[in-house]
Amino acid sequence: MSVTSYQNLNKGELTQLLDIAREAIRGHFSEELPRPPQLDLYGKKLLQPGACFVTLEVDGQLQGCLGSVSANSPLVLEVHNKARASAYQDHRFMPLTEEQLDQLMIEISVLSEPEVLDVDNEQALIEYLENNKVGVVLSDNHSQALFLPQVWEQLKSPREFIRHLKSKAGWNAVYWSPSMEVKTFTVTSIKGKYF
Image: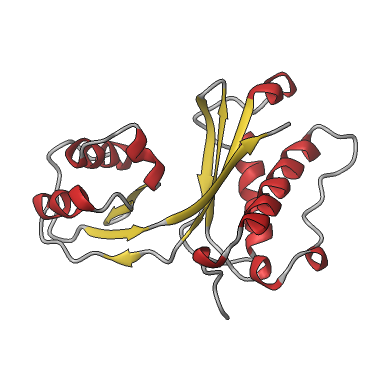
């Protein structure tokens, strides 16, 4: 089974993904039962398995962000499901309301296949990130945390980026384990208004 190569998605395909996310959110407010995208309307690339995150902002403030790191289902379905989950199931936020739709921005990030980065310690990771502003997944035992590359817009220093990522995983600022696994990835993304 091939996996969607995020690099091969063109502007038109990314726009289709944005439309799918809009429809998934809109379906929540309609009288009819929400329906997943009709697969026969989409090209081959969008039907291949793909991993993605859907990020929602209202008035410039984060309102929801959920996604997947591994590609398990067709990208169109993944975007649909993650858009609904980000809007209504991200437990950090109250569910999206109809009143918020006027100010809603949606960002779809399609992930590359995460690759293991061979680093022995946090300093080596920081040095790598000085020149590589990529997405990062840290995992150790049963804890894991992920930041999309877009987080670099807020956390510009690699040391701060890693500190916040460790905090997200529930670790303290100085935590590092010999069994820590680091993976990196890139994204292709599109951002647009709900209306």
